[in-house]
Image (cartoon, rainbow, N blue to C red; front, side):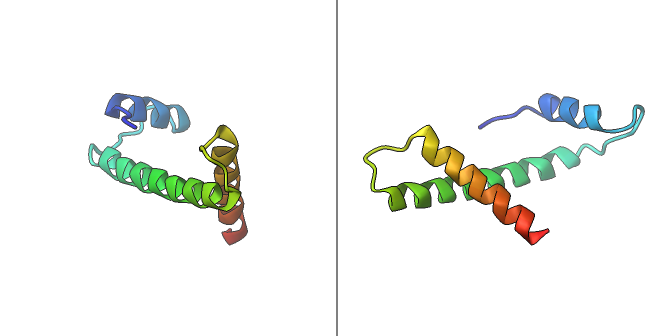
Amino acid sequence: MIISIRTMKKQLKRKIKQGTYISADVYSVIEKYMHWSLSELNLEIAKIYAESGDRKITTTHVEKAILNLVLTRSEEE
């Protein structure tokens, strides 16, 4: 998964007050989080798939993994 700095900047700028300066190093930190998050999702997908006994990974496995991660995070808050 590759997301350009330009795309990250656009997304972030949409959420903050106009004219706010963003340090250039912010994007590398965002990228680190995104890689960690993708890794976490892949682990959860693998777990759901292994538990299912299915022969291939489907969108159902991915959706269940996402739901598990969202629910886990909301419970922590």
